Image: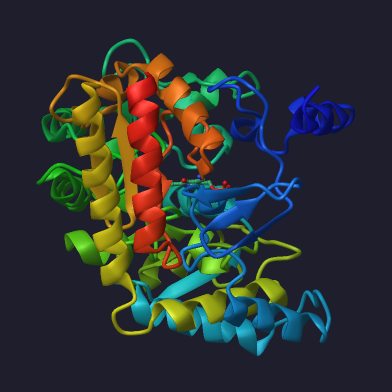
Amino acid sequence: MTAFETLFEKAKAHIPGGVNSPVRAFKAVGGTPIFIDHAQGPYLFDPQGKRYIDYVLSWGPMIMGHNHPHVREAVVEQSAKGLSFGAPTELETALADRVCDIMPGMDLVRMVNSGTEATMSAIRLARGATGRDKIVKFEGCYHGHSDSLLVKAGSGALTFGVPSSPGVPASLADHTVTLTYNDSDGVRAAFEEIGNDVACIIVEPVAGNMNCIPPLPGFLETLRAVSDEYGAILILDEVMTGFRFGLQGAQGYYGIEADLTCLGKVIGGGMPVGAFGGKRDIMEQIAPLGPVYQAGTLSGNPIAMAAGLATMEVISAPGFYEPLFERTRALCAGMESAAERAGVPFTTNHAGTMFGGFFTDAESVSNYTQVMNCDTDAFNRFFHAMLEAGVYLAPASYEAGFMSAAHSDEDIAMTVDAAAQAFAAL
Ligand code: PMP
């Protein structure tokens, strides 16, 4: 047995599948997950000391790279004062002020502990505020694992949703309508039929849970327009995109404004934080101001707030984002030309600091069906070759990659070299 196999077997004794979140188990790509000992800057290190250039970045949060000294110091300093109080702190006010200053249309914001909590609560709020039950989501978007959101499309575009996991009541899935991402006409047609019953649309403004799928021109604008027309609340799930497209998230980048925004990942700098916020009149419906209930024992945890504030300070520095955008572009361009030299059908998408590669002949990939038509076997072999070469990509072909400020041009060049060899070996 390899060292990882031994660790994984031990983990499986008391942890379901050996992991605390399924995709970590390498089920999609096969083989055994690597275990991490520590991380620094753009690198992960396993217990044997092998180094990996990391493009997963804890699934997005570590936009400054791992173990950034400013965040670490804030956490250490705050932890000396106590770990949790369950009573207000000035840190919560400071982070809420900062986030409302930065994000378009955000008057009030509530901190929670994960992206799942943020989206689940935003949906309850949208339902409570509109008095409607139906929600609209898009195939291939992931918004956490709450019941209303673990729903896939029925057989026709407008059939009621069906649970995508046992344990989700069909009667609840009934209220979730799943449409095709980037299909503006489909959205308009659906709203003509059911628009007056829709509490909210929830969408990833750049989809990062079906690889990386940016919005086609007009798609987000259509969602904004139909929401206004039919009195539905537009929820932009920026758990992944928030603070990854500039300070104002995908909303600033694409010039679109949500009614409610969900945040997570970067906002906690690696600590468990999520948030939902938006327009005052909607947010005033949440307890204790209004009747829609939502709460959390550890919400606004002081250590997590300190990490979030320290992160906001670093990413607010002028010029923070441009080099990340440039390196994201360079990585994609480098991988595409390496694939071309090797004669491997491959294309990439990138937006902001997110990217994805697709093993396909298609010129562009812009929805879930196209993602699912890509060559998964080729990706899996590529993934393992890259891992062997010391590059850690997300262990599934339907996950986006992330860039950090710690990745250097040299890291990008090494990654492209490794990719060239991996493509050649395919
Ligand atoms: N929304 C989006 C867009 C996400 O990418 C994720 C997690 N990847 C979530 C919500 C759920 O967040 P969490 O895993 O923190 O519950």
